[in-house]
Length: 444
Image 1 (cartoon, rainbow, N blue to C red):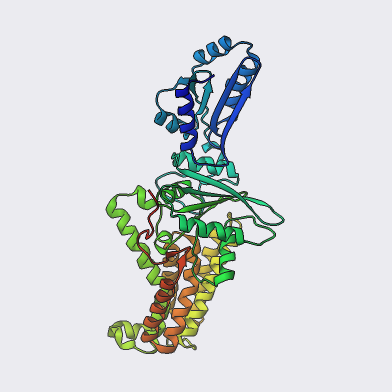
Image 2: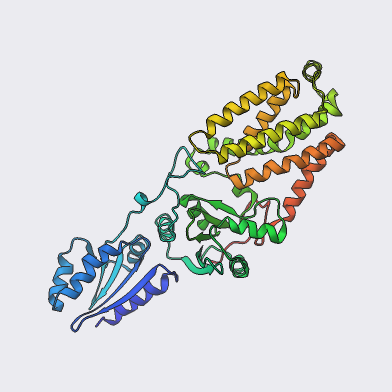
């Protein structure tokens, strides 16, 4: 039997571990021996636990023989302190409670060989591993990067037919309980037959509030998930998809890249400013071009105004039709690059864009300056690091274009501020969409 001190230590370790579906506590009995084991199955190799612990436990006959085996096993370490045991436990080590001793079995598993490289959110520096379609592997990757006992993992099922396993992760010290309750209620209210990916949550929210901009971030990077957990966010993992959902999400999350952490201070600030400039350029440049050329050409220098007028001399359409024609062509090229096979997609769209641009210019359908405008808008749109927000930006610019076409420069300004006012009105599970800091700190 265990001493009172060992019993207290065991209860303290169990109580400090947050309840989670991957935390395993098991008891093992033979006629002469009794043992308990505590480990986290998503970051522990259960094959090692079976071969190095359970098999010898049931094959040895006496207590002395099994104790001698444990002492001689180089993978077994003695207990040093309660905190160090917890630190080892959340890194994949199995804790063994046997007789009057507490031992640690090194059963860490390396899942880096079973995951894929990032393909959507790529970075030059930093980790290159992304999530896989295995829920256990994804949870293990997060635990490797976020070794905290306060990480709480809850499991639920969504989908009346698919019965998809969904995990809710949060740091109990940092996450806001009210936000957590809202997210749980939202998941409980989902009534769909087939639930196969976290991106479906975007569609479910859109159907309920018709939001133009996404209010949740979908990521394939475990390092981004770890950073957001430390910031008090709630993470949703869905079985069968290599993406995690981060909640709540504000605009600055969509404009940040993991590259910002791995670069020097001024380089990171320069890249952040560059993204916001690209965002504004893609949003207002088409409307600004139409407003100035159609209503206020005097804003250009004389040489530039004459150059644009000469370029548009052979174009038979008003400037807004010219802009719409080229923007729609660019949208179709973008969609084609996504849908085509990877082997031919970039080549086909690059050649198609060059041929279409040159042919449209020579045919007199669009002006030379229009090719520059559309190219600038397309490049600026791709500067936004998160695709969901980049797709939204592709729609928002048409609203500003329409306002600029009808009301000129005043319409561009009004359209821009209307979009800002709309985003001010939005919130993501209680978090204001345009907030700069976490407004609801978690409990300590």
